[in-house]
Image (cartoon, rainbow over all chains, first blue to last red; front, side, top):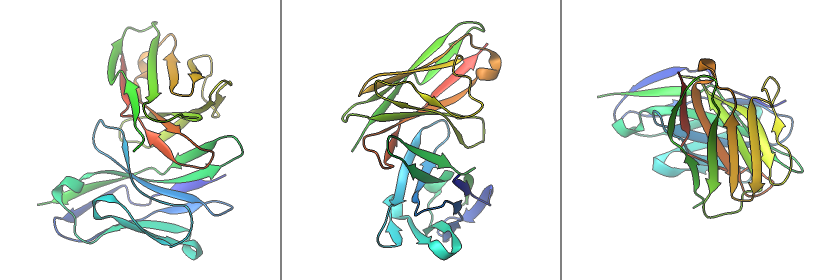
Length: 115
Length: 115
């Protein structure tokens, strides 16, 4: 069965600093990988996704992620964070099947921004 | 883009009553809808997957008689929490997928409080 691990529960970075959120997955085939962001009490917004092709994926809000098969990782990066980036970030892996598709989420990483 | 609307956003109900939460895909036909539950400061736990016109597939440990899911049309799925108890209080989020591979769009969530 597929699984997703986000080893960092909480990260604090200074505004303007670079950011990297870690994500490792376990899946038998080529996974479909996602990063979502959630503000308190809100639903989820898709930042970016990887299905195939170029392993460096660009997303919204200046985020990018790199798929590294050899490391089973899909880390999220941003060169310079803004105070508005403070939120909960979820990495997720998708499982395709003949009739349905599941998305399984990691435990999340809470990002705080230091002024 | 694809929009998923969830209603209500907040609901408070008395213990022992039932509560229905709606999930609608507003601008696309959702062949598959998913229901997640999120505990405070925790990740999203997949509860069930529903395909239009067929019975929902529940994840292990989720009581199908307690959490009734109906997916009667390609734009609407409902989750009914029957005989609600305080331990059912949680944040429930739906997502909808319009094709077999994994591309899911999330509703804004429903905060259920059982008193």
